[in-house]
Image (cartoon, rainbow, N blue to C red; front, side, top):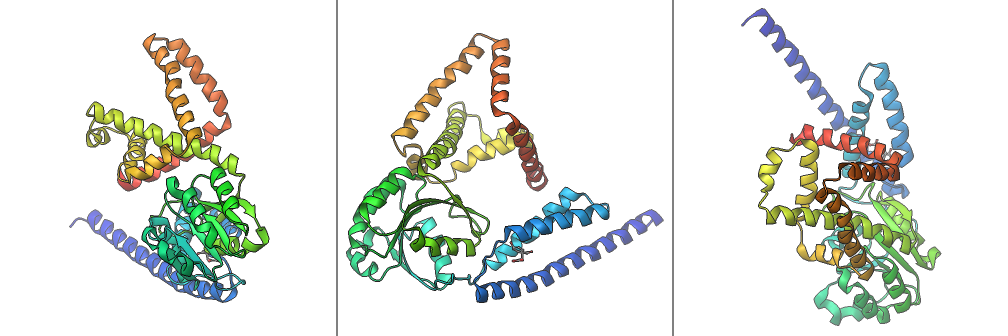
Length: 377
Ligand SMILES: O=C(O)C(=O)C[C@]1(C(=O)O)C=C[C@@H](O)C=C1
């Protein structure tokens, strides 16, 4: 072995030692996190503490800069550590609110979201009951002495399920739902129940590792002081809360869920029609195109009925999708007429409309693409 090879080997050995040391330190950090979550459970404190994380990130960046390290990389590193810390804290028991343990019924509790929240609520010490499709003959028993009922059934049967459960509920029971559609649902709940009502939309799927730092949209219905403990409980689980107006929520959802999924559907359907095989396209794609292909492809790994419910959710959404499809003429005509100048004019008008957001989109998407390329490239 040459002298050069020998020194390379000794440097690599030193790097291995340092990496092992990092792992040991992470393990020690985890042991401390275990004590943190025990203290939080004893004192009813939340898993995710935004201020603490922001302060730590700012301090870490400063220290990294002084040590001549890449500050953005250092921030990512710390964010990953804290994310794993929250996952760890979400692994066993959860803190409960000062209002104490409650009885909670999940209607549709055997679906993905129902199971996720049933497990978390159970791990918090709440009494969890499930009412699924075939359990309606037990509805009376399941709704006795009940603090909260959450409707988490497919969109298309949400309103009829609300109407069905309403008569079983006492004045004190909170009626809530997890549907991605709010204005009609909140009206249905207020109509079916005279007690506290709150409409919720967890902005995540059932496949998340844990709910810490996930967003819960909240639309006020009735009796805020009575359902306050529930919002508090979400915060203790680590969720972020955003209060929204139901109409405003639904408009945004038409665009985000309806339109976005529809664009992906159109893309996938076109690929199928012209036999553009995703594997071949992926091989020829740089990270950005690959990311787009993945955004389209991920939909088809999921349930067709779920997407049908999202796309066909209601009349407003279907109207918007038809408007969207008809709008394609504007661009199709530019292409048909080989109107390069018209294309540039339209492009610039869209850029103006997007304003500063376009720069933010460029920055965020570049970040995402670099991370993806590093992991899967
Ligand atoms: O300081 C806390 O409360 C923690 O739970 C620890 C920790 C971390 O791992 O540093 C994790 C989650 C919080 O959001 C903030 C910080």
